[in-house]
Length: 266
Ligand code: SF4
Image (cartoon, rainbow, N blue to C red):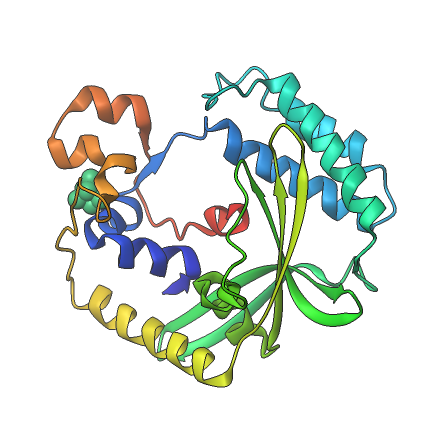
């Protein structure tokens, strides 16, 4: 079995959710505008480092979703998001803080680790490059809100960055957050992941795989702050046995699906 960060984090948020998604073949419909915009924007960033026109790539990729019946949040529109994307690309180029010396080799890089007999773990790292001259693992994020920056080093507690550090063996990591708001902003968040944190993440993965293979899928339900995973869970229709909610949010794709496309999207 091949595991990924997304699978492990889904299991840890709610084991029942993992079962719905990975064992029973239910998938969320791809109509979330923010998620699809994030995918299109990452294609544009990759193009930028390959010396192609990122605005053209963003337009082409984002156009593919234009008539897909997208669900937008707050005041978002297709045109408005495109405009924000172009402004973010311009700001990122002006800042000039990130370099990827080998853009064809070092973007969307696959790393694989053997976990034990018959099991491995795969990760796709957005890029390996330099932030302000320091070599690091780079992760792109698009968001409608700023990421927390205080206290200093808080980013080292981000499990996805810890995962990438563990997989690559590179201690220095950075998140570049493209914030879509009235005045767009690019955040550059650096962290150093200790070897102890890497080892702890490896143990967390092993422990989670053991629980999955033992067939433990009890729900971690909750609707009250701060334990409220059900309020935003796409699988809530299955847990409430309400077919209308299921049809609105999910599609059923039976068969083994390791969710590798999810992995590229997060
Ligand atoms: S609705 Fe709640 S209990 Fe059901 S899968 Fe989602 S988070 Fe888990």
